[in-house]
Amino acid sequence: MFYKSTRGSKDIKNAAQAVIQGISQDKGLFVPDSFPKLPFRLEEMKGKTYQEIADAVIHSFFTDYTEAEIKHCVNGAYDSKFEASEIVPLVNAGGAYFLELYHGRTAAFKDMALSILPYLMTTAMQKEQVDKKVVILTATSGDTGKAALEGFADVPNTEIIVFYPSEGVSQVQERQMITQEGANTHVFAIRGNFDDAQTGVKKIFNDSQFASELAESGCMLSSANSINIGRLIPQVAYYVYAYAKLMEQETVKAGEEFNVVVPTGNFGNILAAYYAKQMGIPVKKLICASNENKVLTDFLQTGVYDAGREFYLTNSPSMDILISSNLERLLYHLSGNNGEEISALMNGLDNEKKYEVSSSIKEGLKDFWAGFATVAQTNAAIGKMYAENGYLMDTHTAVAYKVYEDYKQETGDDTPAVIASTASAYKFADSVAESIGLVPDGDGFVNVRALHEKTGVKIPAGLKGLEDKEIRHRGVLGKDEMQSAVRKALK
Ligand SMILES: *Cc1c(COP(=O)(O)O)cnc(C)c1O
Image (tube, rainbow, N blue to C red; front, side, top):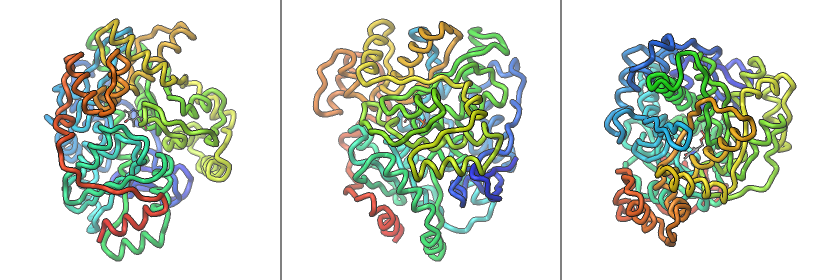
């Protein structure tokens, strides 16, 4: 299987090369040139372990890796670092099935991909005989940064550099990042929002002079953001796994459809569900849930993407995004792999912050349904779910749940639904505590303890003792200082 750029240049790579490079030279994203069929018959999937499914799904996309190499990556990633033995439990509550993707080291779903990416990357470096040091640049809205730092800390021949918006991550998220250990880790707050951080990182990637300067000192850049195909493909596995579980529990028979609901920011997670559908998993609707930054809701309803709008800081900060990078991949697939068309749309986004897709792409968007939830609706959903079912949702998952309720009401469709549950409630303890009726404290760590006392839900190991850890990364940069920060970090 080969990987092409969404912007139509002749930059064609195998999976290992695409993983190392991160983003195409023409600024496009790498996409598979076709979708593989499911590696098993639906019936056969019942009873398979997470690792078995991940092995087969990842290998069907990454065909240039050997079976043994994929197994090594999967077994290294999905082990006792996860606090749930089944890796991703599927929990029935309040009329939906919550796929809990947050039992990894950093308590958010980013661990699903970022636990395995360092293995895929180092294996690729060996396969491709790369003798340079790979410098991973990452922009984060809060969760990617910590998961990437944990994944790459002290991995030989790599440096990991993370930029996060100084205002716009939760106290727990920030503390997780600035206390990161590891000799190759670098963390910077920047003055601006996530889009500024992501744009700054993309700019550094596209600076060919900087690239040759780095090459001279034996370094090359790569990305741990979901623009890297090595992050996207491992996420396909958990939608396949969720379907296996639904069959096992006899919620569906083999071949019967289910809905998937995803709290969406950069469009990576929901795109992975779309990939699972293309492989043959019977997904009915892909339900895209946004917070007040509802650029995707509007887009999926109208076909007009308009990022020229007010940006809101919400209590689901990992979705406070106006430029959703992975949407570009979906548009490419829906355009019938027309790189020129996508290139023109993305130029429109760069120049006018806006584009409208063709009628044939609009037709393809009908697989999706979209809605959004306000902060007040999100908090109300958390409170109601806890009061009625004793189930604790984080703010992002609650956005998805609220949008799912709207979907059911508007369409009357009660097909079983899997909701991607993307973070532990403890990462957003301030909002969650308040939502279930506690009086929130100004200190997020006090709220973590109060939430635990009230609910008895276990505090993830990675968040315990966090407030007492040594702060190792300090300082705030202007967004035009990112490149010089990279230079300094590599000295
Ligand atoms: C990153 C993140 C999201 C958004 O996922 P995308 O793949 O960027 O759409 C949602 N919830 C949480 C908790 C996240 O960390």
